[in-house]
Length: 151
Image (cartoon, rainbow, N blue to C red):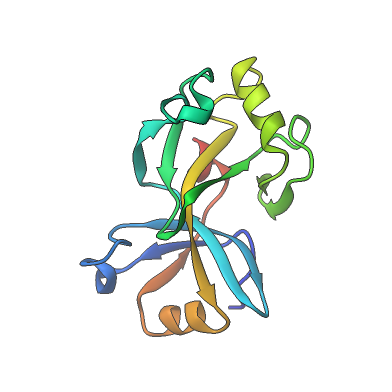
């Protein structure tokens, strides 16, 4: 199967002693340069309002998106009507967009944690790298939908 945005991956026992132990990942980008995605099921242990820049925001949980670029926040959502410029991933899921609109939506309660998931860091693979990891049995492609992400 060709890698594409919207695929869900589950780690296998081959990754038990790694940062990807029992990880479920949503692939949000896949192209000739490689793939990008987010670990969906690892809470970061802090909320958005615990970060200095967002101390006046409402408490929305943060998730460990992956080991790459943990200095920045990334997000996926299912509300393109409220957040402009997001890239459609599939299954009613969008990656990124106007973060100011997202924070405003959180603060005026038009967005809930059922609509948006915010990550610290992401997962990234160079061209062919993730395909090789799937081939060697580190990942399996699983059925998924927006309920797995936001439910």
